[in-house]
Figure 1 (cartoon, rainbow, N blue to C red):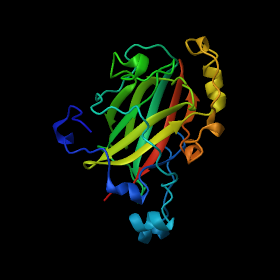
Figure 2 (spheres, rainbow, N blue to C red; figure 1 turned 60 degrees about the vertical axis):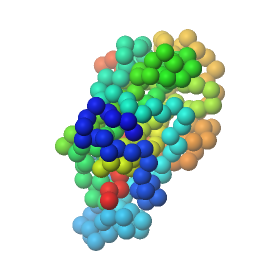
Figure 3 (spheres, one colour; figure 1 turned 30 degrees about the vertical axis):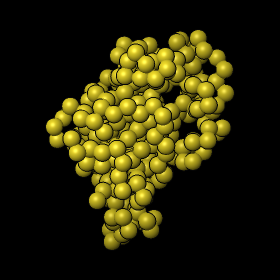
Length: 238
């Protein structure tokens, strides 16, 4: 990954050998929620515990990066750049999959389509390389927060957000986050989403979602002017 405006992040790379250990996996356990490991599991902490199943923070496999990734996204909370859409606050928590403890200082990197299904840097969005893209560093609670809008759809895919987590100079997860179809249906009845019709790919018919997507669903709740989506993500550390 290119320099994200912090000198200490220069060592970040796009791929890690940790992928073979399961990478990042996520549980839609509500805002800040995370499965706990009992004291009896303490001896199974670390990669061995992950492999044996004793550690329960690791719940889903990695998923494809897709064709729309761009290095060097901005470190910022608000990624909308004034584009219209139903407001969406993302609360993405990163924990150590071996202990379920929060990780401070991880870089969470997200990108997704705007309300009309366009990615910045590609096709109709080629004039800009930045809207609906951004990076946040996790706080002491392992939490990264973004202000965005509910993503639009495009042909062949269900509604989703791409995510990477960078830790200690490596990418420890590449995945995708998903939305309940019933909530998407309600959002898409409003502007600007309602200006488009023909969404045919839902979660169950999406080939990528079928490979672990049910465990990457955001927990959504209504907010004053939109939604808050939360998920806890466990990563394997060296």
